[in-house]
Length: 120
Image 1 (cartoon, rainbow, N blue to C red):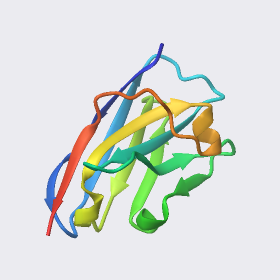
Image 2: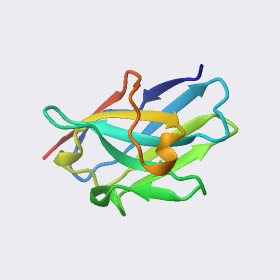
Image 3: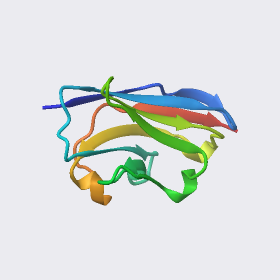
Image 4: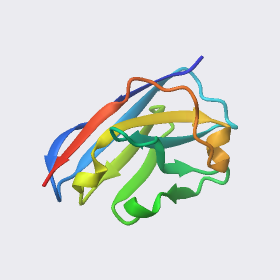
């Protein structure tokens, strides 16, 4: 079973940048898609950015133009570059790899996540 470990979160001021990493131990099934999700206190978990089945990058509207998802297959690592951060981006961020993500479904199982806090 593949384990995913998120890192790179932290506290930044509005307008700052962070790069999140998601390291996968083990081989991710080729039919899986990977994505980033987040959950703020009192809110539902939401998709932030993901790859679809054709390798296209899909972004949630509020992060378009500011966030970039990428992956390094050689390192088995998924990244999320976050620029121009806003206080409303503050949340726990999670990565995941499932077949459902390819179609935009939110997974049920999660790792520890990494906290992002943006101050105004």
